[in-house]
Length: 317
Image (cartoon, rainbow, N blue to C red):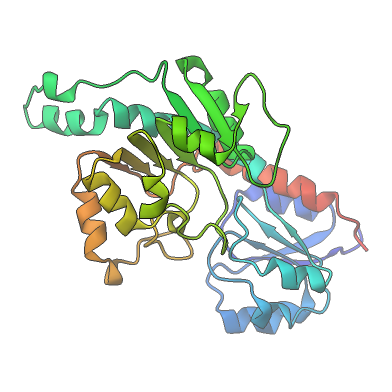
């Protein structure tokens, strides 16, 4: 088989991705510990890069590409890639949000149920021998209104996962229209501000969405709401969220992502965690998970399978 070129894996992935690329003629190399300097040295000989989120693939790196044809992101967000510059160099940027959409939808549903039924608090109390029934009385989702911001892969998957709970679902997407269905009514932000009981964020991180959800944003909701964020941590301003929690504008928050994460998402920036994180972590009406909404056994396979198919569909020359 003719050599289709060399592909460098910068992060660990399911082995099915490398197997699929090898079958179509690529030579795969694995260097998860490579430095930026080492990557720059290898760039002229590479046809492809596979990355999750370990560091930014920016102009400083891409300007050294000679034959690079694609950058494959195992996941959804492309904020760690200079997509505009890559495009100007004829480099295709691919991602695989279809691969973990179901995982994120199910996780968001689970976090919402845990939040409104005080499951995490009650679990901790029972383990200590405390039996507080009245204090842990929950609320039913049926009859409530869910507002979904961003109706792509994960937003629509969440609507599907929550469809059996009898909620009215309103969805807003700045870049899409005509997507209303039996799962969700297409709405504008004014209707969501007016009607939502629960808000779930499913948007990419960019200059437009960074700190979108701040104190001013939360003050626009006519009802007291529950917040779910499974998108990116910096979409939510933590200080603004804390103020809204303290004023009871937000009744509770379920956060799979935090603005204090490292770029790789592998750990928190513990050396510089501000007091706002500690205040957030102490609140009983906050549910936290470590950026694992899309992190299931099944999604690990599907993320690689979807990306392999997209790469295989590219012309070799």
